[in-house]
Length: 255
Image 1 (tube, helix red, strand yellow):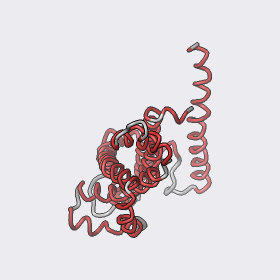
Image 2 (cartoon, one colour):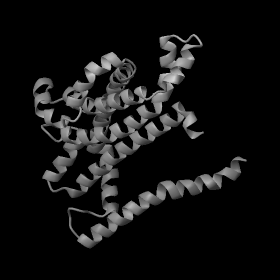
Image 3 (cartoon, one colour):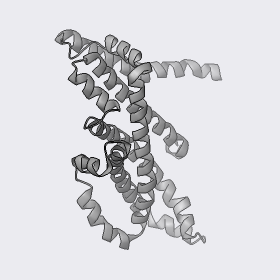
């Protein structure tokens, strides 16, 4: 049985994973060849520079940026989910806090970067705080809306069986909102990396954002594209990990 599955698995891997990547590199190669500009090097040279730089300086910057993004996502998750569940199920508190959320959520948090750096310094705390501020609101709003949409008939049916408030959260509301939490995390991971670039390119001396801007200022385009590949790889790894956790934590979604 397992041998019968292998050809399909290999075929799916080639079709769904490798083909899009090869298509992207083919388009990149054609653009680089057509433009013939040092600012857009061919993918082969950029990849070679990436593998040369990873054991050296680029690898260090990659690890620093990874730590900042992961720390921000974890803080946002453990702060945003409980608060979103609480507001989504407690209407009187939600009526009070909803206007505050509506006022602060649309503000581009990146505008607070200079203030945050003055207050928290130029190191990890300011960058992690700024990324957390962005991702936190995405998780909070998504969790709150998902909790509010849980069927009251389902909650009442569980209450009629003797379920306590904690049981309702554990067995009804939490399973209902969990898929939406993972969706918010996937969206938030992309936003986190975008904010990371801005945070690290402003008065910073480490991280992928700094590496990219430093290479750009030196007209080292191969190194710049190596940094772009590293940042793309970071986003891809985060997305794959979240996708895998989603399948494990929400097996009913595949039914």
